[in-house]
Image 1 (cartoon, one colour):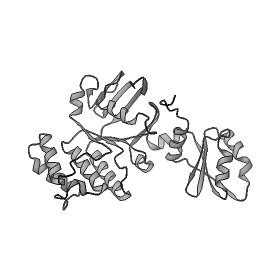
Image 2 (image 1 turned 90 degrees about the vertical axis):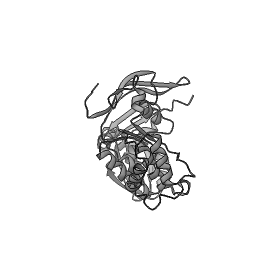
Image 3 (image 1 turned 60 degrees about the vertical axis):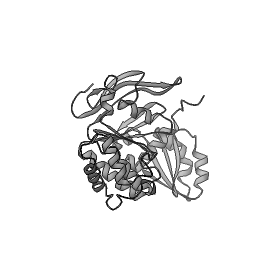
Image 4 (image 1 turned 30 degrees about the horizontal axis):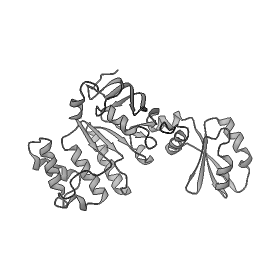
Length: 311
């Protein structure tokens, strides 16, 4: 394994089971320092478990690796001290103000100037003017910003974000991601699980995990290229009928509606072309060969992933 300073996480052969179910299977990967690494996959497929193992919060049944230069099996306590964890559910004190929450946490973290640290974080995250507002009265976007400030108060080297923008409006999501990129530029390594394709595209690298198995990883461009998907965008009439007619045909791995169009994709080009041939000349349908999107790849991977929690 690479022990270089440019690698934040380097693990090999990680496996983890709960109640006889394998949640993570023989996972090996590297994460660069200062990068934003996104985890995608179906619900219950092991994303959160994987993230917790990578940073020493869970002990794997087998495998080895390092996180921030520490052994994930022997030095878990040292790793935890350098990790900030932002959960999907807002977990700060609803009946304390923004300032009181940050000052309280700064004292828990043992920061020498709790008031100063809270004041600086409020300014950094654009919370000025809301210092005395109760946390429970904040909108979803402001709560998210406060939670981010709370988990980065002690200047962690690794940040874990578990579905951080669920239920947040688009502008708040964009502002949040701008802040995350700013933190990464300062050297913070970020692991984030998300279902939003636009957020995945904001990550430096992504990994697709389905029911414990790492199916693909790399930059968005590498993941799309590695899918070997050929995609057609179809517009016109009777797209529901076309969906029913094409689903399950040889060479067609995915048929999915996108707004007023239909995406038809497959990895076997010859079989795909043969299956769509009867509909190519219909005047009511317009076919356009297009580059597969990350969402095309995501849906296609999900369609051929076996749920290990089904009998």
